[in-house]
Image 1 (cartoon, rainbow, N blue to C red):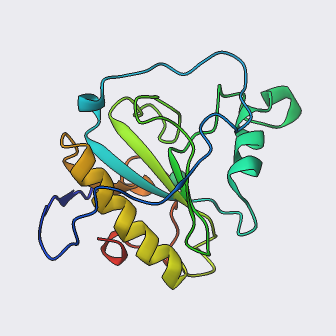
Image 2 (image 1 turned 45 degrees about the vertical axis):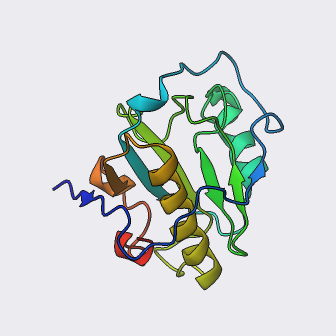
Image 3 (image 1 turned 180 degrees about the horizontal axis):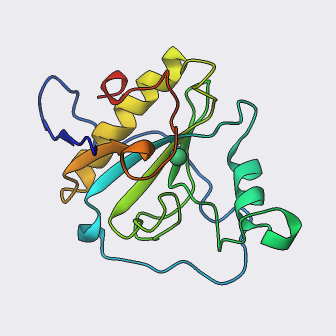
Length: 172
Ligand SMILES: [Zn+2]
């Protein structure tokens, strides 16, 4: 069953219109081809993921996503996620919002992907990640007014992502 959390803009959340993050959009490895793009107003849903790899970072995920399939990668034009939140709470921007990158099978055109580094089938998100996640989600809801829902990867496809120990109410 698809579970979508209704937006509660302004409800007991700080107003964050400027968020500190490290912009890696033009620094990460690229693969063959290029992702399609969209209007900002096409974005309806923020989707939360975990990385499965507790020791990964934007560069390692980008390397895996862009490596050719014959070499064990995904063969994608670029990293799949729009944002990555590390266990220390640092937020990395990895794709422009208009980029239709790949992070939910057959459903990326209206979705923006946020990945928390960790394997939350085993571990739990850190307090720093939870706080950073709340700030990032609030920032995105305020700066992309077309966003109507927040979901987790398993709402949309057959996966355990973002793990048994992660639930959406931890970060909204
Ligand atoms: Zn996922």
